Amino acid sequence: MSGAVDFIVSGERIFGIENGHPLMSKVTGMGCTATALIGAFQAVNSDATIAATHAMAVMGIAGEIAAEKSTGPGSVQVNFLDTLYNLKAEDITNRLKLITS
Ligand SMILES: Nc1ncnc2c1ncn2[C@@H]1O[C@H](COP(=O)(O)OP(=O)(O)OP(=O)(O)O)[C@@H](O)[C@H]1O
Ligand SMILES: Cc1ncsc1CCO
Image (cartoon, rainbow, N blue to C red):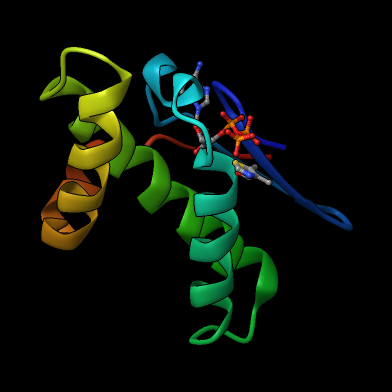
């Protein structure tokens, strides 16, 4: 379930990702983008729950970096793609807001 907090729920395990930016909800197709990223992460991680959590962390962190560089939804859309392309491991370690149950 996506939103201000993304919840990844599977059986007994619940993870929350508190990254992202409200402007992301103003860009049509961000949900589909999240689905595509989750699919890509499934291809390289046999733990589907962790793969989805990692994907949403990258989604949210790229989204908040993009939004910080933007003046509205149009620039968020373009900056999101560039931020994803340029994302560094340190961006994830510095910004990750993970909630564990
Ligand atoms: N208020 C918010 N704060 C932080 N991140 C948000 C917020 N709203 C949405 N997001 C982020 O935007 C991304 C897309 O989620 P959203 O809930 O907007 O999808 P959606 O409505 O299904 O999208 P669409 O229908 O446009 O494809 C997620 O990564 C989510 O974390
Ligand atoms: C189906 C669809 N078409 C444009 S946006 C959208 C929702 C997926 O993000």
